[in-house]
Image 1 (cartoon, rainbow, N blue to C red):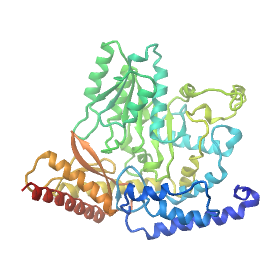
Image 2: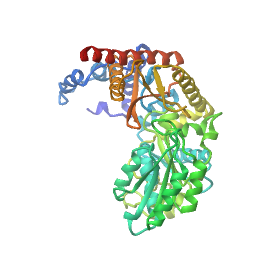
Image 3: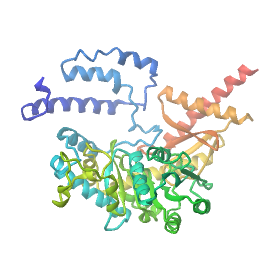
Image 4: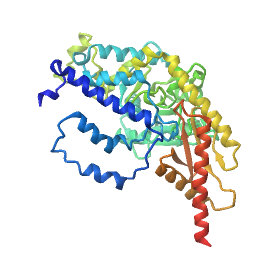
Length: 480
């Protein structure tokens, strides 16, 4: 079995095996004609359950043959131009190359003696990102597994900086369109069940600062502590960006930590034309960025940045076998001192390779393309009597729903839109997401593929309308 260990004696075996795997994936990418096959859980589950994991196949070729049937054939392919579902992006080739390198070398980014160059590359990228944000010379940060972890760490620092002996009095303020991880973080941090105060949004789905000011005043009046305000720069559903400068002013006035969740909107940091949409982010105490959304990186690639690197001490614990206190005096750069994780992948290498091959403008131009596409899609929807579209996009998300020509109940329209999404997914012709707006069922295009065209959007809208009308027509027949 030692022949399967990656080392100097098996380098040629590694080369052949990985090359064969890459060729399989490349063939699949070249021949895939739709984003999904439409397979259902009852259809696929028995084949996977039938695999005897105690009886190995013996070689990579056989395992890849099996994998073709169990995974590659039915995977949801984000690179396809009619994948319009969640915040999943097609990935750039330099990042995939970085993924191959980091997986093989398998550095762990917790301590210097496990990662050496990897530690310095990650730190350089943190400095680069903090500089793009404008956080100042004391800024620091660390790569994380994703936006949820980044938000958790940002709010952990906020809790500790609040310096209160009674966590039950701490309050977090976020818009009603903010990510669910804000509420999850509050729970994990041991705050009270009503710790998160939901602030109303305006017609563009941006936090209302007048309402925020009123809630902050009420918080202080009731003897509570405004721990943090979470401003969202790119909400999951709408891509809306909260008014960051105004929120920063209120945070300063009330002594609240300002955390900006820019998991989606961080692509604006590299945009040649839209960077101004993030004006005000430079005032944040902490910022979440997800490179695996709008920087076209493979999952996972995320980071949390802080204005004052000293606040990262709240995540620092020392273990004699790993990062003893003496390493601080010796100025040994151990990233575990800043992270909620211990063992941690060298995910920063993917972004490094991307910037070294494509440059920031190259990445930002791709994000600009999908934002431009969303604007064109909005014009298409706004002029189509079959659809109601919610807001004009700031980033690359469109939220809409099919409205039938004949009068029917709102509940029936909800069911028709739900049916259309499910039927479209089952057909494999396209993938779209769904959400609720003011209690009603809507559909969502998340546009992160520069290969998607306006013609693709128009074709998918026709498919959705066809499925919705089919549902309504069949129900009309059954009712009569």
